[in-house]
Length: 195
Image 1: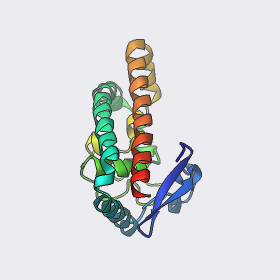
Image 2: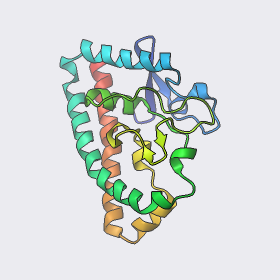
Image 3: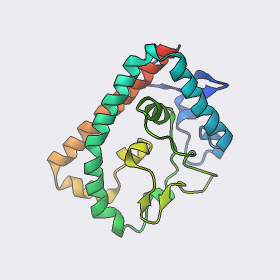
């Protein structure tokens, strides 16, 4: 599968879909977000778990990819924590309160393959709401549980800080590129194993 397609789970089966479903515009209806109800969230997770059990042996490459992905993500987390410490506490336009984000298929797949606890629900409850895990002192999810969008997003204040440290900016950019590539490899390996 190329980088321009994505997958969704419907009735326990994987289906290839266009990116427009995978990443709907900000003004899209809530129904455009994958697994936005408790029943759909449970069904998606049950489907992934079933596929993992049924294809345990064939999923070695996908599991190794998830392990490599976790390793690179964990290198990014201290950088992001440092940026957040310097910017988020004084922020008056908190991205977690205004962003419209969710766990996508690669995020969900990563959580399952890497054995990371799955959040109890998709991030949004209804259109116009902010992330259910945004607390008064930041995200209530462990950083490893958060969608990738919550890791790669760098706000203007953080970009300004990074501009003062070109080597740090380059390192972060390189790590994020590695993560994107590893996410694609993990998803491709999963699809090859279960198809």
